[in-house]
Length: 151
Image (tube, rainbow, N blue to C red; front, side):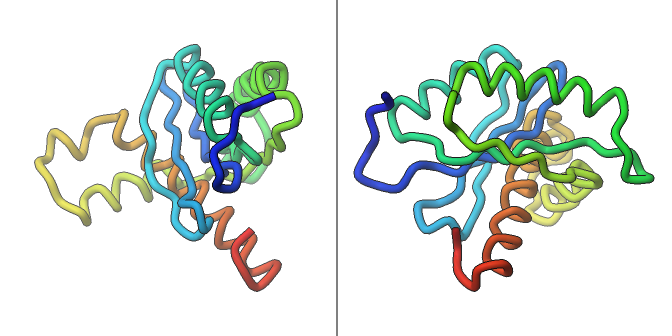
């Protein structure tokens, strides 16, 4: 059983890639998603396990890479295998598949908006964690629309 801090368990956004996994965390009030880091897939699993042990994770919102037409394909099969690993590693944690179409483009656009040197804006790791934050922020906004207040 995870040792949890006094705050509510975390909501975590996940942008899976074969080489890098971007992670994002919701603030304690579950209003704002913030980039948390980018890791190799196995390292991301260790980071999530540690986070669950120290703070608890209630929900993982995993980017679901549908095609332009909104159908599943090879990329969703890869993410499904990663989700199976998450389910084994973090039993009892709710996993939500979230349509991630266009999140990488939005992430690049947001990084351009906040400025910084061109090299930093092209850093794929920064894009991945920003994409995870966008996925999680969309989920948080959806929850607020559904219930009238943050999850």
